[in-house]
Image (cartoon, rainbow, N blue to C red; front, side, top):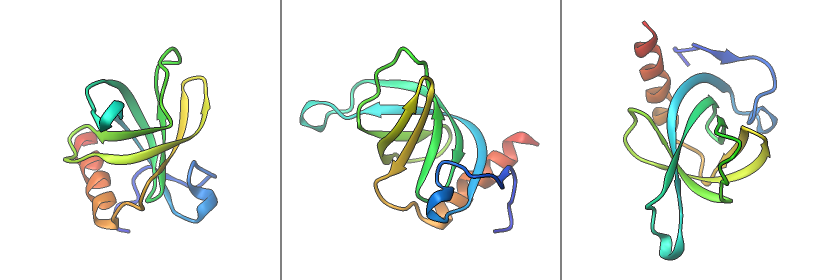
Length: 117
């Protein structure tokens, strides 16, 4: 991939499944899936690392996160369906419900690179 910015060479949240993990430290929003699939409430987060299969997020430790939710990355159009895999205080490890498209991941990485310079 041409943009290796923030490439995580250590074991990351999704490194166990063979996908490259990238450090992006981008603000995001967790959108809760509620009764009858409504999505009225949300909370802020920071997307620390991302791969095609999942991500690592930071959230306030006092916020209760449901097992299933949508993730929105600031500046990126669309939401990603997610499942909570593990939580340790403010650190969340999540799995995407479907692998994200390589072009979408490239777009996220390119946007992060452009905002840093």
